[in-house]
Length: 161
View 1: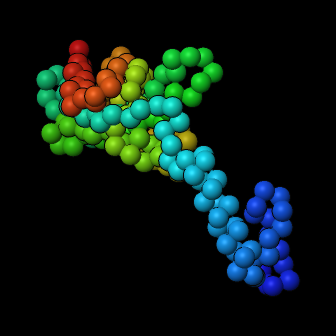
View 2 (view 1 turned 90 degrees about the vertical axis):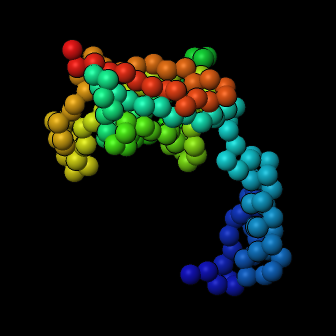
View 3 (view 1 turned 120 degrees about the vertical axis):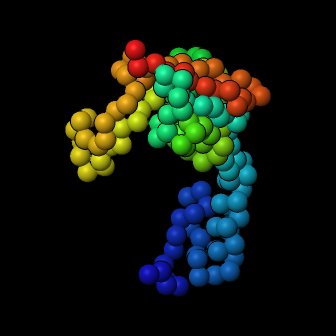
C-alpha cells in the first residue's frame, strides 16, 4: 500500500509524489500525453475491412467451422497486423473479428486461412484431443485476398472427395 511517504516513477524517470494533487495530476497528464502521441488502438499501418462468407462441404452449409485468417506481410520483417477469427453458424455463415485489438473484419491484403471443425481440449496438448475433424486434410489450408472495401463473399466451397 502506498502512503504519503512513498513515491512512484511515472513521469519519464522523475519522481512524483502520488499523495499530492499535483503529483497525481502529473501522472495522469503524462499518461494522457503518451496515449495521445502513441495513439490508443492505432492500426499500426494496416487497414481493417469487414469480412463475412459461407463455408460449405459438398455444397451443404457446414456449421461449427473455425476460420483463422492470418495476414501475410508484403515486406519481409514487417508486422502485417492482427489475425482474425470467425465461427460458422448452422447456416454455414461467419463474420470475422480481429483478434487483438478486438474489432470487426480482417486486415486488407493476402491471408493464409485455416479451417477446422475439431474442438480442442484446452487441458490436453495432444493433436488428437477434442471432436472429430470433418474437413479433409487437403481442404484445411487456403489463401484469401481481403479487398479494401471488405466483402460478404469470402466463401469456401470444400469437397470431401
